[in-house]
Length: 143
Image 1 (cartoon, rainbow, N blue to C red):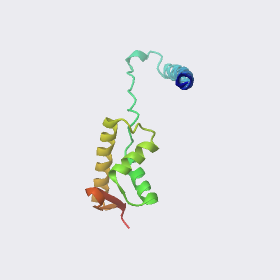
Image 2 (image 1 turned 90 degrees about the horizontal axis):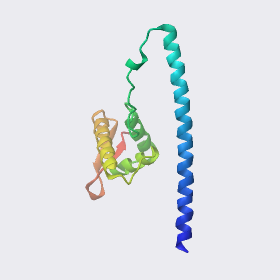
Image 3 (image 1 turned 45 degrees about the vertical axis):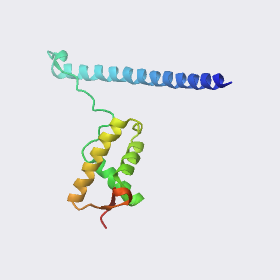
Image 4 (image 1 turned 120 degrees about the vertical axis):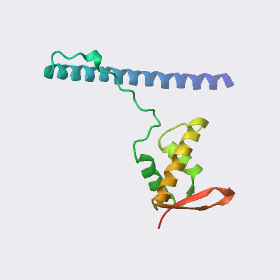
């Protein structure tokens, strides 16, 4: 009986992955078309251009945040939710950004990043911290 549930779940997962692959292939196809258009435009302005000399730029990691994005998210969260500790902020922010909260290495990296952002906000007098239950600092927006 349990095998039917397992098979059903695996079939569902396979369908989900197949759909992701189709979507990624569509994105790849569109990116290749866009690249061809840029190449043609470059050749209009410089017919002798060596396109192979233009090195591809690596994409930032999925969890990369642009300058100020983490701080803005933290401040918005503290304004709407009230005082929170850094651990709760980390889990909440990761959830909003659809990051894997089960990945302990990523959680630790995000916790460090959020801690640094909170300390920076405290130095700029945007937030305050006070000792909370369990010895954790509880952060709140400066009134």
